[in-house]
Image 1 (cartoon, rainbow, N blue to C red):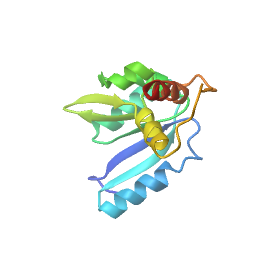
Image 2 (image 1 turned 90 degrees about the vertical axis):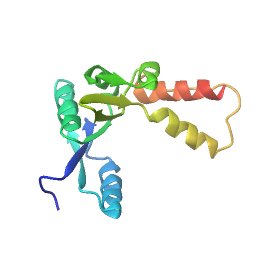
Image 3 (image 1 turned 45 degrees about the horizontal axis):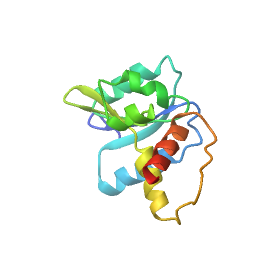
Image 4 (image 1 turned 60 degrees about the vertical axis):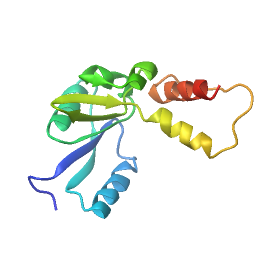
Length: 143
């Protein structure tokens, strides 16, 4: 049940209707008995900073997807080293009144690569967005 104690988390981007994240996150919240809800919020680049900051400061947070991962970094008070390295933020929350962001794409890609046979030779990365940049950083860490 959603009430005044419910923490709201969101996926911010455009499009977001196709995402499986809300189903996965809400299932986890239910399984853990947490008073939280995760919703997809389609937003424009102009609305991103205010939405991101309002969600975090209200005790929630969330994720950022295309096409806003690069722009999300400018809405943060503090950013992880990876946000600076990749040039993209995909996760945000508040700590002590400050809006904080991180990039979890690199670690997610590295974890997936750990389960696979490492690719040999050169890598071809098709794309220029935040996800593609994360692949480049992950590839660099793998040598």
